[in-house]
Amino acid sequence: MKIALLGAGHIGQTIARLLHATGDYQVTVLDKNPAYLKALADEGIATAGVDSDNRAALAAQLRGKDAVVNALPYHLAITAAELALECGCHYFDLTEDVAATKAIKQMAEGARTAFMPQCGLAPGFIGIVAHHLASGFDSVRDVQMRVGALPAFPTNALKYNLTWSVDGLINEYCHPCEAIHEGETIAALPLEGLEHFSLDGTEYEAFNTSGGLGTLCETWAGKVRNLDYKTVRYPGHRDLMQFLLGDLGLKGDQENLKAIMRKSMPATMQDVVLVFVTVSGMKNGVLLQEVFARKIFATRDGAQPLSAIQITTAAGICAAVDLFREGKLPQKGFVRQEQVALPDFLANRFGAAYQQSRQVESIS
Image (cartoon, rainbow, N blue to C red; front, side, top):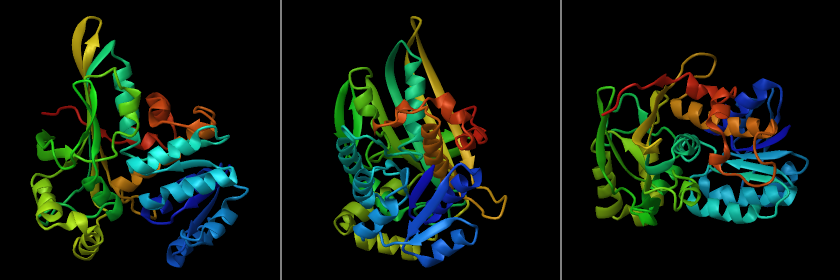
C-alpha cells in the first residue's frame, strides 16, 4: 500500500518508522524541513521536500498513492483532505478540530475513497473504548471520557511541559465543547466543568476541552443521558490557563501565547498518558458501571526514545490504516472512530501498544 505521509515532526516520524518497518507499506514522507527529512532518509524511508502551502506541489506527490496520512497541524486538515479527494486517495488524520472534521465529513459524502479523521488518542482511541463499553449495556446512562498527556516530572507553575502540538493544545482550550447533558446535545464552555480525582495515589484535575469526543455525540444522540470528554492535568493548571486566556486576554492573541509557551516551556520526552473511561447503565435489569483505565509511559528502548504521546498517537493512526488495509473498516465514505472494534484495535500490531501499557486497577 502506497502512503503519502504529510508532516515529519515528532509524531510524523514515529508513524513513518512504524509503517515502514512492517514492509507492507511504501511510505513517502512530505515536509518542508530538510533536517526532519534527512533523519528518515538515512533510515531508507522515501522523502520529498514540499511546502504544505504549495497545493500544486502537494497534489503532484499525492497522485498515484493509495492513501494520505496527515500529521500536519490541525489548520491544514481541510486542505489535505481536499487534495486527497482530488487525487483519489484514502485519507486519515489526527485532527481534534471540530470544524475541520465536519468539513471532511461533508467532503466524504459520495466519495469513492474513505475519509477517516481523528485517528489519534483523543479523539481516536478514547472514542473506540467508550463506544465499545457503552454498546455492552441494555441502556446507557452516563459516559465519561478523561484523557491526559502529562509530564512525568512537572516542575513549573503550570505543572506542564510541551508533549505535543502547541497549536492543538491552545485550540482545544479555546473552542466550545460538544457534550450530551440530560439527553440534550449542548456546547459546553472550555476550561469549565472542573473536577478532581486521584489515580494511583496522584491527584489530578479534569475540565472541558473541545474535540475529544469525535463523532460520539452524533452516534449516541437519543441513547444516553450524559456524555462528556475532559482533559486531565495536574491540579492548578486550569486556573492559570484561565488567567492567561481570560484575564490577560490572550485568547484573542493566540499566536503570541503560543510563541511565549514555545520560548519558555521546555518540551519533554518523559511523559505519561492517562486514559480513563467510565460508563454506567442498565444490564440485565441491574444498574452497573464499567471502567477502562490505562497508563502508557514513555520508552527509552531502541535507537529512538519515544514519548508516551508519540506512542499512543502514532499507534492510533497506524492501527486505523492497518485495519483499513485488512478490510476491517468501510472502504469508502466517512469512517467514524467508533466503527473500529476495540478487540480488533487491541489485537492489531500497532494497537497492541495500548495492551502493553499498565492497566490501572483502582480509581477514586
